[in-house]
Length: 233
Image (tube, rainbow, N blue to C red):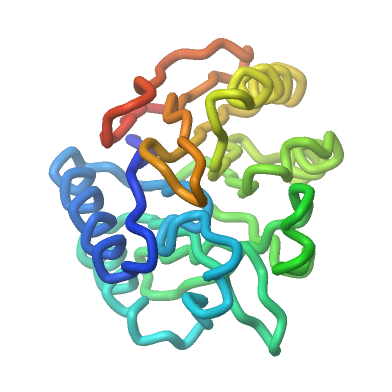
């Protein structure tokens, strides 16, 4: 079974361009028979705090239909990031599209300093995803700063931990360290997708990576190129 992290650039205030970039990556993944593709934090809009409310999605947004269709067409689980509006609250979240045509939502549980001005945290939307023999949990960026988050994933007997990042060059080393620790401690494979290029006036560090359940970094992308990191598990 193949899984993939999509390392992409974002286009500020241009959601349509971002959607088209997602579709390009999904097509490339489908050509390689990938069964799951993970995109970075708020990938549909870019990591843009001040613009998040204006650019937000809700669960019934017609712009999401294409991802539902692609999941069915390619027999693929697709995780895309977005600011998500639920009952008048704004969350950093992931839309998760499943091959059977259903979809679900994950919301970021632990906010980075400053995000609380724009977003609410929530642990109410925390699905366990199944792909063949894999039990899959989801995390977004600052979630991994809370050791309780991967511990909870372990309690659900997750075998794969998916992490959507917006990490800069100054923070990526710490992110790498934590993901290696969690992979080894909880015997979980870890797949991480990060941005390259700039968002929110900051540079994305790229270096999307995969850690096996022994905590070893098995594969990574560089810091500058848009690309797919494809892993066989």
